[in-house]
Length: 167
Image (cartoon, rainbow, N blue to C red; front, side):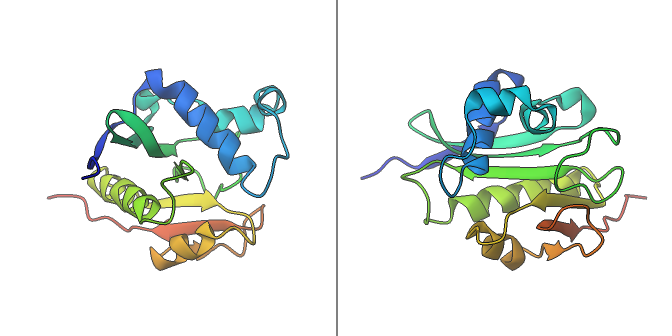
């Protein structure tokens, strides 16, 4: 019987994991960028800066203690936005399921867990960026993300959460 998937919170010590996940996301359709090229580009390297003190959070899925997927939500500075920038105060979501674990619903479960946490944090929205042709686009649409016509980059999607603050 296969081991079950477990989850844990993303930690600053997981930088290598989200760096690798960022590289995999950038190269989803074949190798376009090396790690060195990605590291040298501040707008790309920003995706694997993880600062919980700024409100960043994430979840790591594991089997037998080994990562199988990760989702993280990053608050980019307004003067250095990510590709999925929608407006100030809206963090950007990234997700990556490692090869061999794709196609079984793990990506959807990770994104749904990140959305649930966003609601607990009373975030107004989450955004992301996805290239045309990426099969993940359909997952995001199924989860309620919609294209942003006024975005700087095509493929910017947003999920408006409109949370109600308690009392």
